[in-house]
Length: 275
Image 1 (cartoon, one colour):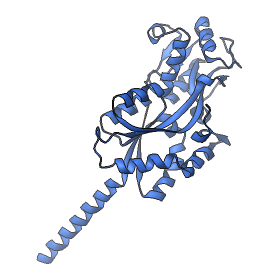
Image 2 (image 1 turned 135 degrees about the horizontal axis):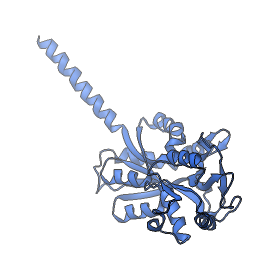
Image 3 (image 1 turned 90 degrees about the vertical axis):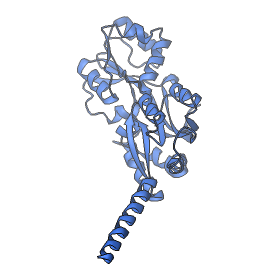
Image 4 (image 1 turned 60 degrees about the horizontal axis):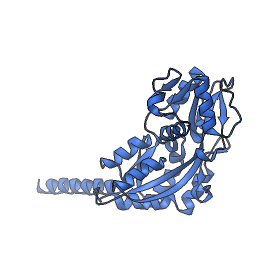
């Protein structure tokens, strides 16, 4: 009986140690949806885990929600793409280190019939003014994502505030992810702003085609943000730092640049970032 109790206690102790070790070897990444939905994270994270033994559990959300998740202490590291929201996060004292890990671009897509007559242009602000003037259908994510923030910045440059846009019948705020916005645009033959990676992996294009690309205002940068230990528990921040540093390492940068879908590169490594 005594031997049985000893063995049982030993099993429980070992299980506790193993569970503790597993916890220490896993982190939560609050990530923008595009790097997850595009398949990039699924492609590169196994390389990181194989190298370090650290498992990365991804919570994919729009940038605003991802930063809120980190504010609540429910994430150990953040990967997002909204410079203004990131600056606010830093100014609030939540971040200790921010580094760019990749970039691509936004594009405006729309129906091949092009009711606003803007196809082939490179000026995104002029294009939005033409869409508004034509009262052509436009779909907005409306979800506080980095893409939604970029869209609203472009509308402000086109002299349209969100308060002025929302009552317009041609402006459709879907309050959802990029896939939902693209599906809505496809169904309504509407224009929308999308990141290129999601567009390349989107399978329900219908009549949608690329309308505007190549504007320097459409550059889309992705940053990894480490959290301030004074604002968060420190138990997993060391492992999160290992992950953040790996993302900017030559190994990860090569993997990011090499990732393709249907023969097309979705993300550029940060070293190749435009000025």
